[in-house]
Length: 512
Ligand SMILES: NC(=O)c1ccc[n+]([C@@H]2O[C@H](COP(=O)([O-])OP(=O)(O)OC[C@H]3O[C@@H](n4cnc5c(N)ncnc54)[C@H](O)[C@@H]3O)[C@@H](O)[C@H]2O)c1
Image (cartoon, rainbow, N blue to C red; front, side):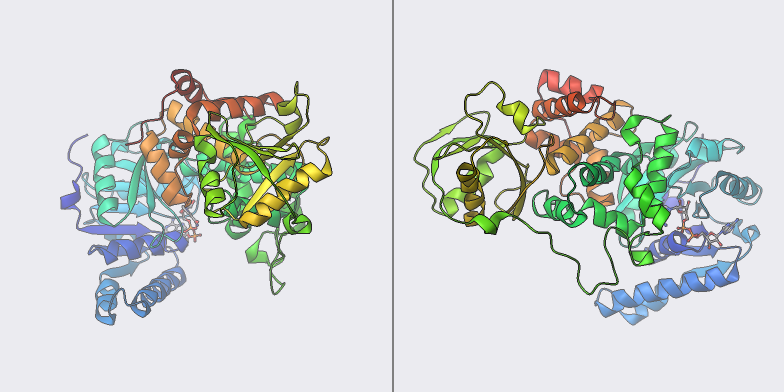
């Protein structure tokens, strides 16, 4: 397609829909110097949109980021209208109305009769196919997805989504424009969930399954994911924040869109929350009760035991080197230290502490004379972790496993013994995020680099999935997924072909 404007030619922007997203996007465009028209059917929504922009700019003034004069200049760049007929001269239209294909398609069809052929069309849809939205346009090549995250002025990520007919020049222009607006812009192919809403599914899904299977409280799962996994929020508290209804419906949409792929099967326990009307923060109750003054603290096991421990020897591998550093920092004696592929800390009374590998502890110990295996969860950084989940072989003597508790206690790491489930809490989630990221890569949804950026800036993960895979070791990740798949032969844990192929050559993913 020719004739579409380049970034330098874009001077005026229209945003259609003055709700949560539209008003935020209008603020971003105006803040970066663009003359912006905010459009809504409803004058009251326009008034509310302008008010919310004013409040959001006030916060910037209060934090000293802009002065009151700058706020006025930004606001002056925004005009409002209830009629799209006035948009004839705009260079870019960003649509952020209700999530309905018919509504969106109708707006763009009408716009085509108003604006010039060079005007770019963008939709902020989070789940509708860009190809479908553009299918009845005369110039479908001019339409792309421009998926901002909520709140748009704060969240760094924007997914620029190409439908089948989208011109690459339109994508290039939108990527450059979003970047100039201070965003991290990633390219994605139009497919259900794009990048973030697809790759993030296991984060919630595995948290919900651990809740069901391990019979642990939400507060324990969330605490381990934060304190050991390095996530800013645990999966269950995050679903409370997003809204259980919204989170459930995104999962359900992705599940249906991928023809009931078991990878995305929604959770019955989340559906029960919906049945109860426990939608999370907005309804005052979800996994947590927000009417309570404080949230319950998870009950860890470590201090109950305390006491004495003695390390017999340590095999240091790259995965446990940060734990070995912590042992050294605490001046704990290591009588014998060697290096190996699989890290082990052996204690004097027979416990052997290893990082979970996706097997159950019983399986992992099979064939050995002493039932010494204690598996611990995979920490993003054992020097910083202050909690860990562990799984203990059921035949290990109490005096032997108490040594492990005492060890963690001495290091200042709270420990929680959980049911013998493969992959424990963090590793199981992280490998499934990596596996889904690999599937998205395999299907050409986005590059590994863009998927990593999307997950770091769209949902604030401490690392991108490919960076994580490289850190853990691609082959180890693949082995862990395969073991989960053997334990749960439902298809949910099947290995992504991209992960299988990378594990076969045993090379890190290219993410630079
Ligand atoms: N809310 C989020 O967290 C979020 C995040 C990313 C993307 N999105 C997507 O952004 C879009 C908007 O979501 P929202 O949460 O801002 O919705 P919202 O309900 O807050 O706002 C939608 C606005 O569109 C207006 N509108 C409806 N039909 C219109 C029409 N024909 N012409 C002009 N205005 C019209 C409504 O009056 C309303 O003000 C949806 O596609 C949604 O999927 C939402």
